[in-house]
Length: 186
Image (cartoon, rainbow, N blue to C red; front, side, top):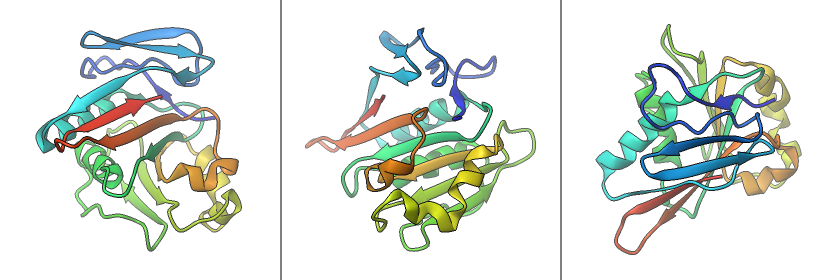
């Protein structure tokens, strides 16, 4: 089972409710996100600058609450849309000191999180070069998904859709002609 997005007492006003729980509502500013059957069905945020992008990633990170298993987030979008940049901004907001880079050629990178954070590890997987869900087996994907201490980001989820849990936060990043980005949560 995937982890949850929810309200933490110390979280910024970015709160999406429980991904794995049904029929909850939450809001970000004047926007509403509705959760049915464990899926966020509506939520968009437009960011115009790198500072806004990083702040949005930090707000997202602050809203995460571990569940029974790993907290699983998919990142979708065209090449250059900001998938790795989003994972990097989340990692930095959670206190990762290492240089966070794309795992495209190594498939997976694991970053230890500092004591006192809700998760122990941030695991960043890039499925761009994979063809099917079974290609995740060398990463011990099933095992890492059982550990509630894991915060897992997976880029290019459509490449391995047959192996992904249904309870997941999904983020679509879209670049607009003016250079701004739309982050769609659903």
